[in-house]
Length: 156
Image (cartoon, rainbow, N blue to C red; front, top):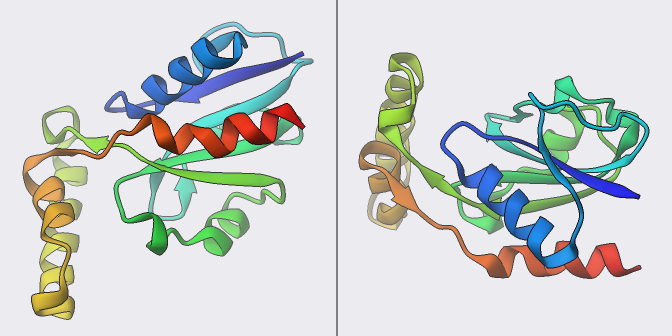
């Protein structure tokens, strides 16, 4: 059997994991829960730079699908860097989630402000203002459609 394991800070990784569980009837666990260690895993974690948070808390050899949740546009997902940084060579999916600044620590909020200013400076009129607003004020990009390729890959 395959199980779903998630690590979430603001809730979007957990929401995607629970929704996939509803669709597939696979059991869903937090990395903080007791879960069967001998089962294959679909892992959901949020992205911090190139690191999938919480992935180090599971046996990466048991992870078949890595579902990375972030807020950046799907076209800008640094797939190769994420695979390399997390030493993961399997199937990887990117899903847009949300940012809840009130759930972040001071340092994470400061980093988001710095990154958003850097994006504005570098991109100018071409900057994604929806993303920049989300980084500074909060924003929600959750969409069940991001789960469709994962569901399809699980049917194989």
